[in-house]
Length: 253
Length: 309
Image (cartoon, rainbow over all chains, first blue to last red; front, side, top):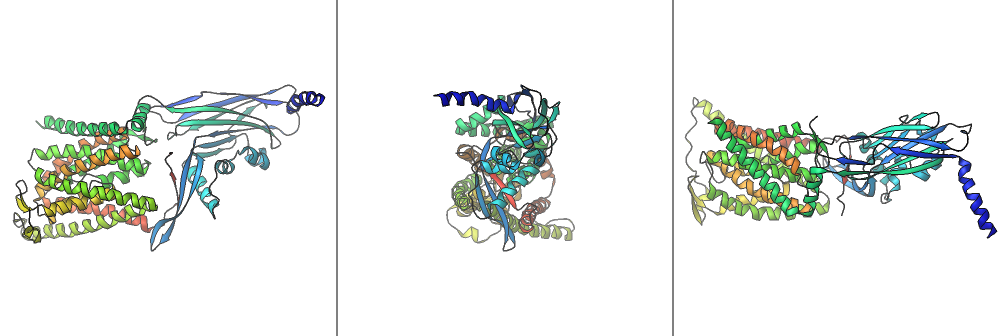
């Protein structure tokens, strides 16, 4: 009984001993994909709340990650067989994020320790391997590296070092550009503050990315009324084909 | 500017670019009587549309440009409906079995290679044959002072010895229904495997195997393609939900206009010129795909997103 009371007394002080907490905001918590959607910029901002003056020593740093919904993938490798390049081997990844961005106030290796990176799965290599990592087959590492390379090239995976602005070790903000070829789903935004490489506090927010308007109507119909959708597509083609022909006949008269 | 987000393909592309692609393919389709499926799929893949969506939506676009083309040919009475119907009967049978083989290859995980090899083999073979033949015809015409030799209404071959004869008035033929059924089935089979309408195979087959006059070949081929690709579109829509209506609409808008211009140009060209141009186009696509297979790709790995169950 006494021990429990002591524990209760001790717990909040343990948290407060850290002394610094994140208070955050997002410029928007939902993104609507409409027909003219051409990417979206999201402002992520926040402040560090503290009970006492900022401790001396290692400076405060901020790391922000944005993670898109995960999907299963097949990664294939080509090899030369009988003179032509053929897919010879493949691995299946149960889930890999469709989008992943890491924005920081400085070089990752300086502001984040390896152990905390691994613990919170912050940087790309850890984040990819975290979610239902590939069947640990021989040489699967090479495939995962290829996935990182391919997605980094098409800017689905990004490392934005020095892209978070931090004022007076208190206010921070960053803009993350979501690409035009977004996948629908919940985008997870995580914010971390670190000192001397150690994570002091972190918090999580969600941005819902949804198709809207015509995009939504077509998508829902294609999945719920596929036969009707197919017939409408055909009718559309037939009408357009006929209209063009009739239009040209009129023009040439 | 003019960027458009496609609901099924889930990519954002330039609307003007799509109209342009539709226009080019439609133009060729109206000119040569091919559906253009063998052109539109590579184009769409190139701009980042996923393969499944590219094949299914391409089929939908081909329906529109074929209808536009057939209507243009109809005015010139250049469609042999009876021949078209016989070809179609064979075609549906062949396409059904082609789709079966396709899914078997998919289960083996080598469907890309299989499709590419079929493209190289059939496009290359047919392109080369047509090219040699039409080049010879052009040279002959030039040597005889510009006047091409009179083409006989039909040439007697083994085809004419078969039973079940039928009169095809528009083509001026009285032949057995077996060869057109067989040609239709073969084309349907290849169409099912390669995901195309099969016009590039059908056109030379009608000219060289069935001995049909070039002027009815284009209209009849387009007529048959409408039904094969229409069937394909609905099957894709139901089985895999990969038909992107917005993408199709833009390709169609470009395509139907292009097809009308193509028909006008096609009418002005001589049959031999038309054939040699089609042969060159078919060969070019075959060579491009062959190079893709032979050269070391820049990226040995590829990432394919699996459809969520």
